[in-house]
Amino acid sequence: MTDPKDKQDPSDASESTKTALADGDTLKIRLEEAKSIAPTLVVISGKPLGKSFYLTQETMILGRDLAADISIGETAISRRHTEFLISAAGVQVRDLGSTNGTFINDVRLSKDVVHTLNDGDLVRCGSTLLKFLKEGKIENIHYGKMYNLATQDDLTQTFNKKAILEILAEEFSRSIARSTSLTLIMFDIDHFKNTNDRFGHLAGDYVLKEVCSLIKNKLIRGKDSLGRYGGEEFALLLPDTPLQIAVDIAERIRTTIEKTQFRFDIQDIPVTISMGLSSRDSTTKSHGDLLATADKALYDAKNQGRNRVCVR
Image (cartoon, rainbow, N blue to C red; front, top):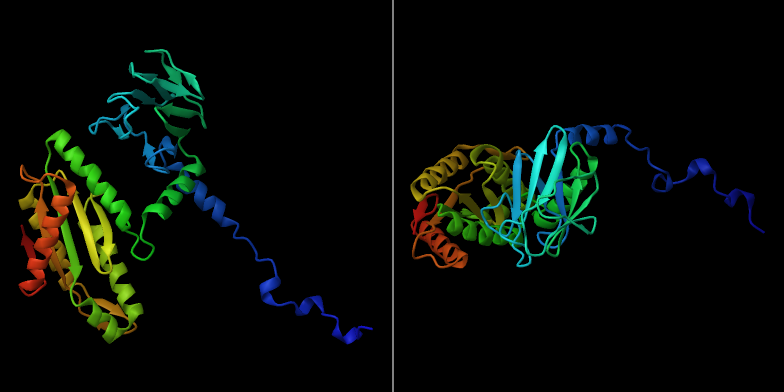
């Protein structure tokens, strides 16, 4: 027989078994965030899976062409495949005489017929399936966060290596198609192992996060791409940026990092970076060539004493 004294008093239940109180403000915050988001097309099947394309211009073209507003590199998509017309009245869509057609909820649009999209409609071009979301939908935030989880480095909140290499390949092709400049900066935090050994790995993580946050939020443009290439090495991609302007940007980043006070657990941590630059020109045959050249320039900067910018 069980001793009555052995019966557990519900009031004695451990904290881990109790239901936590929900934060009632969370949904309100998300809804407020969503209000500022434009109508969106989200890739739900195909590549780049999970990516959101925001419909922010009066007219936007979807196609395989790298100059398209919504560029999707699928061979079954025509160079200029579908047009989206955005106004206060909503979003309309029409096929541009594409080879494989534009489908709305699996119904093919006739050429030049204009169709008004409803929230949640599925748009298929080639084998790529996109979901249309009206402005202000909380789903826009959800899809954006899911895409970030797949493409971002957890620690630094920059692109992960796979994502930054994919962006590099795409921007390289776009640079050729549009005959525009493209510069890649590879940079490395100097003597980072010594930072970890002297101040601890938590301090090292702090330095990585703060350096990236400073660069992303204050020193580059929204269309530039920063990614963690490995360990303490990063890649910064500057579209539409000639080499000399990129050198000025790199010097500004380098001097800002050098002059910034990084303080962790009441300790000041000296931080400098070495940077190597390469710009696309007639001799650059692939995005791999651009990467290799920038990497060699980075090694030049290290071999010449670090805390400097070198160009190849």
